[in-house]
Image (cartoon, rainbow, N blue to C red; front, side, top):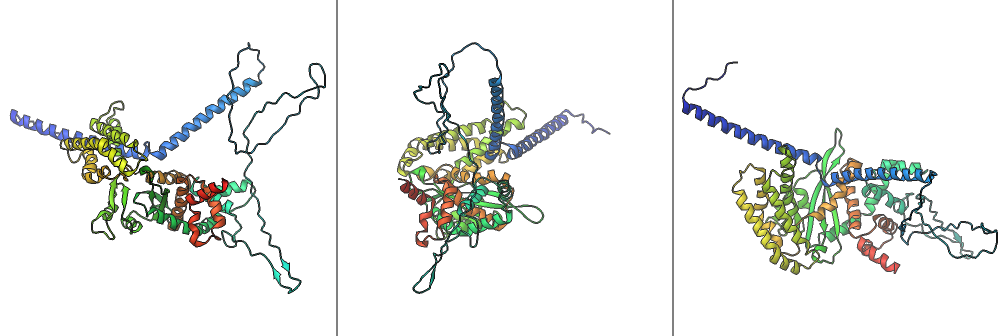
Amino acid sequence: MAMDPVPDDTDALKAALIETRARLSGAEALIEHLQLVIAKMKRAMYGPRSERSQRLLDQLELELEELAAAVGEDEAKTDRATIQVQSFARGQATRRDFPDHLPRRRIVHPAPSCCPSCGGTRLSKLGEDVTETLDVVPRQLFVTEHVREKFSCRACEKITQPPAPFHVIARGFAGPSLLAMILVGKYADHQPLNRQSEQFAREGVELSVSTMADHVGACAATLLPLYELIKAHVFAAERIHGDDTTVPVLAKVKTRTGRLWTYVREDRPFAGRAPPAAVFFYSPDREGAHPARHLAGYTGILQADAYGGFNALYAPERKPGPITEAPCWAHARRKFFELADVASKARGRSSAVISPIAFAAVQKFDAVFAAERAINGLSPAERRAVRQRQIAPLVEELIAWMMRERARLSRHNDLAKAIDYVLKRVDAFTRFLQDGRICISNNAAERALRAIALGRRSWLFAGSDRGGERAAIMFTLIQTAKLNDVDPQAWLADVLARINDQNVKRLDQLLPWNWKAAEAALAA
C-alpha cells in the first residue's frame, strides 16, 4: 500500500500536523462522549435503580439467611455432641417479647409426683418458668352457610322467609375475605393468579385461574364507586404529585408498552389535615392527551418531571385555567449524580471522580435538600419564612454557579444538558421559595409507583388494555389504604361485605381514612 507523500516544506508540515492533531482531538472527544453514553445506558440497564437495589438487597438477605441457617445447624450439632468442657459463667439470655395480641396456647408439662432426691410426696409449688416459642397455624379455608328458615302462618297459610343476603358477586361462591385475599395477593404481593391457583390446590381447594380472573373483574366493577370517590378527593387538593411508569401489555406477536399514571395527594409535608390518597390511570401509550384528560378540571399545583406532555397544562390560555408547574429537584440532581457516578467508569478510572463539576453540583443540591428536611411538617407560612432565610441563598448561589460553568461548556456536552435542564426552567424551579405548599421533590408519586416497578418482575405483563384499567382501579384502592396505614386486605374484606348494602349517599364512610376512624372508635 502506497503511503501519502510527505511535503518537504516546513510550513506545510506544521499545517498538516496541526490539522492531524485537531482531527485526533475531535476523535478523542467523540470517543469519550460515546463511552459515556454507553456507560449511562449500561447503568440504566444494570445500575442501582430502586427496584434493582431491592433485588440486590433480597440477594444479600438470602445470603444472610443461608449463613444464619448454617450457624443454626452447627449449633444444633454441637448441642447433641457429648463433649466435656470446663465450667463457665453463662451470659444473661435476652428474652424476646412477642406481641400481646397474639393468642397463647398454654402447655403445662406434668410435675413429678415425688421428690427425685428423697422420694417424699409432700411437694409444694414455688412458682413456674415460662418459655415462649412462636408457632403458626396454616390459613384455614372454611364454608359459610347462610341458612334462611321458612315459616308458614297457621292463620293465613302464607310462607315467610328472611331475604337472601347480598353477595359480592351475583351468584358467586367466593366470600369477601377470600376475594380480598386474591386481590391483595395479585396487586399488593405481586402473586399472579396462576401461582395463587397452585397454592390453593396444595391446600385442597381447586380454584381455576379463569374463575379467579372473573372474580377480580367483578370486584373491580363493584369497587369502582370508591375509586371515583378517591379520584375526586385527590383532584380537590391544592397541590398534587404526578408521574407515570411503563407496563407491558400482552399483544398478538409480542408485548407492547402501556402506561400507568398516578396522581398523589399528600398534604402532610405542609401540615395539611386532608388524608393522603393516590389515583391511578391506564393508557396504551404516553401521548400528552392522556394527562390533559386526567387533569381536565384541575387548576392547582402539579409536581412532576419535565415531560413534554404536561406543557399544554401550564399554558396561560388553558381552560379552565393554567396549572402551576413545580418541577422536581430530585430529577435535576439525578442527572448530575449519574454523570459523577458514570464518568469515572467510562474512562476506566473507577477510584477517581472524572467530572468535578457534576460532583460539585451534587454537593450543592444535597445542601438544599438537607436544609429542606428541617421544615417538613410545618405550615406553609413557616416553610416559606425558613426558605427565604436559609434556602434561598443556597439556591441563588447554585443558579449563579451553573451560569458560570455553563458558559465554559459546549452545547453538546452532557453536563451542559444537565445544567440547561435547570436553567431553562429556573422560574419554575425557584417557585417553591415563594410557596410553602410546594415540595422540592416528586418522591410521593415515585413511591406510589414503586409497587408497580417491583411487581413487573412477577406478573410480567397486563393481559389487555382492560386489564390495565382494572389494575389502575385496584392500585388506587390498595395504595390509598397503605398511605393511610390501613391493612388493605382487612379493609377490602369489610368493604366487599358491606358495599352492596351501603347507602350510596354514605358511601364515603367506606373510604380508608373514614373506615379506620370508625374501626378505632368501635375498638375504643
